[in-house]
Amino acid sequence: MCGIVAYLGHRQARPLLLEGLKRLEYRGYDSAGMAVINGGLHVARAVGRVSNLEALVTADPGFTGTLGIAHTRWATHGGVTEANAHPHRDDTNGIALVHNGIIENYSALRTYLTERGHVFTSETDTEVLAMLIGELYDPAHGMDLEKAVQAALREVTGAYAIAVVCEREPDTLVCARKGSPLLVGVGSGEFVVASDASAIVAHTTQAFPLDDYNVCKITREKFTTSTIHNVPVTPRVEQLELDLEQIELGGYSHFMQKEIFEQPRALRTCMRGRLDAAEGTVVLGGLRQFAPQLVRSRRVILAAQGTALHSAMIGEYLLEDLAKVPAECEYASEFRYRNPIIEEGTVVVAVSQSGETADTLAALTEAKERGALALGVINVVGSSIPRITDAGVYLRAGPEIGVASTKAFTAQVAVLTMVSLFMARRRFMSAEQCGSLIRELEQVPDKIERVLELNDSIRAITEKYVERENWLFLGRGYNYPTALEGALKLKEISYIHAEGMPAAEMKHGPIALIDDGMPAVFIATRGSQYEKVMSNISEVRSRGGHVIAVATEGDQEIHHHAQDVFYIPDVPECLSPMVAVVPLQLMAYHAAVLRGHDVDKPRNLAKSVTVE
Ligand code: M6R
Image 1: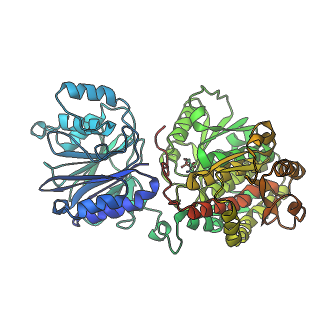
Image 2: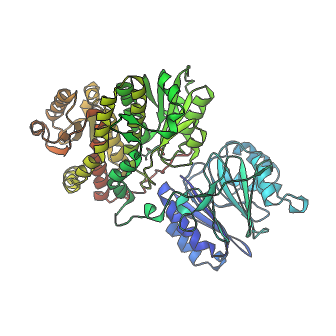
């Protein structure tokens, strides 16, 4: 989604802002812009890549200055045009503003401001906020930039992270947040504000996240933080848990490729210190305090979107199978609006890589208000969802930059497995059974490493089918969600139409799609439904489909059924999605590269969807 970076300090703002914007490119955007204070206010905006903006500002001497704000926009209100790109300005005082989020009452505010004689030049909600701040700005009567921002934000509903400058206050940067993340990086005599730590970490590792309804005024000497009602707040500056190496390609061609290959390491970090095979116990510090409530829970609802929904679906199977607790999984976007019934003993688990997905955040808020115990399975530390949960478990997968989620998926499944074992062990599971599953879980990273060795053959097989425009992904039981994930990966980066479904569902309609040579990817690993999957494969073959199977090492039988086979190591059925998904991730990656697509910045997609 949109990205913000702002700078006030002793260095030139322009190169720093451009570098910050490039680090934020992965979030997805369609236009970019920058404002620098240099005598007056200088603003440049461009549709398309940050490089287009770079070409504009590099040639312009107006953009030499040490205070500036910049933005990458992902269109919500108004089309992808230069006029709609940020920064937006007021029409009187030389105020410029960049904004992430949505001002929900912008229409009423626009009418009010139009009646006051203001003329708008864009279709955005953001320009309304810039104009409102300008309308309230009156330094002669105590309404300086900070106070005008506070007053304006008291009038708006919706979500925002903003950074604001004014040519009449060339030593002041004001930023604020409600519902959309914003970090203030505190360097030596300089400040870098950004919506994402990746734009800060090259300059300082000291930062604090702004809280909702908080406004931060930064001058060249210091910063002060207050609420929008001007009550002082003291933030805690902390060390950022991120280093540059984690957000750089380091020899890989794309972040998605890097993150697929990072999975063994990410899973080892995710599990480190949390498993005790000898004792048959799982140690999850974040849940310890709530263990009695979890043991007594009557129902678990998992809410998520996209890839996180697929891991949550596996979580549903795991919780019922291992912990014997009724579980259901749902799109967060549906859950929040359908008046859900939350009875005593209901636990709601939000699963999200970013911790910022608007629908997942809103679903958890709704569930909490209705009395559920609110848990989070989140990757980004300190993001919005963990800030409202009662408890949770972080993935520790490291930053995921590729828009197509890969290592977060396997880490989410690993965490949901550990949560299921944590509950199972306190309910019905013996130490021996738990210990033996833990030993298997600990071997998963090694098994993924062996699958990654198949990279070249996976590429070769993908090449055979890459021109086909329609694919099916089929699986049963634990690997039905894996099939959904395989289809999602393929469509989002290669733009091939792919459908995932339970293998048995195919006969109820989708089988009509199968024509000569249509690729059908089956997760056909050894397990309780192996024979059934073989029957489904035959149904596809007899209609001319080409079957690509993910099968268990040593299964020779599969060659009688599938034209192409990826062998993965044997793994217990309940843990198999973490290993079986890897060839599907690699297929999607190679398909996108072979088709010449920008793997890390697929069209129309944003890394985290912070609007409904
Ligand atoms: O940050 P989240 O895990 O909450 O994001 C949820 C989805 O937006 C995300 O998984 C999306 O589907 C990815 N592009 C999938 O690769």
